[in-house]
Image (cartoon, rainbow, N blue to C red; front, side, top):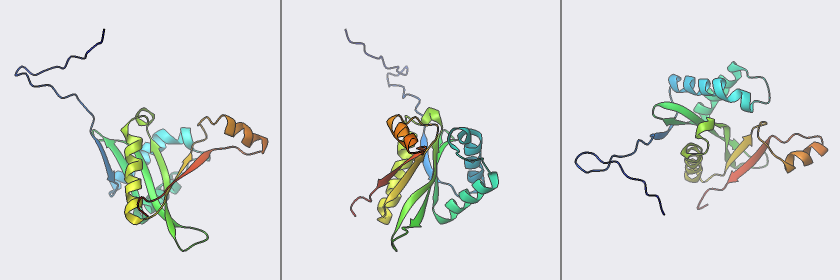
Length: 172
């Protein structure tokens, strides 16, 4: 026997739309945006991902440089910042060509399996596509479990903390 979910209807017979949180991806551009990203990271992300002691002044300079030289993408749901992705351009060490790379990418844990993570990456990918550049995402979280990779790295005296993913610009 299959179970069908009954739709709720208004008294006039029209279906009631489910309450879906509104996700907005936009570029940070104000001091308030910068403060919101600072608060998101300093209050939530540091314990999970930092490999070194958090220095607020260094992070503010990094965030300001990201906003000045690239873009700080904000993921906002119902007016609340739930994630961010900083993207800047860097020159290859062996070429005059450049690529895009993240300065930080962090999403609140309760939003990682949903649309937020994907939407931020898609926006960054769109920027890379428009510029005809590769986008490199450095996933660096020492709290993340790595299994076999960790065991092999420890034999060599290393501690794996990251993965680099490179997305080639579509159509280039």
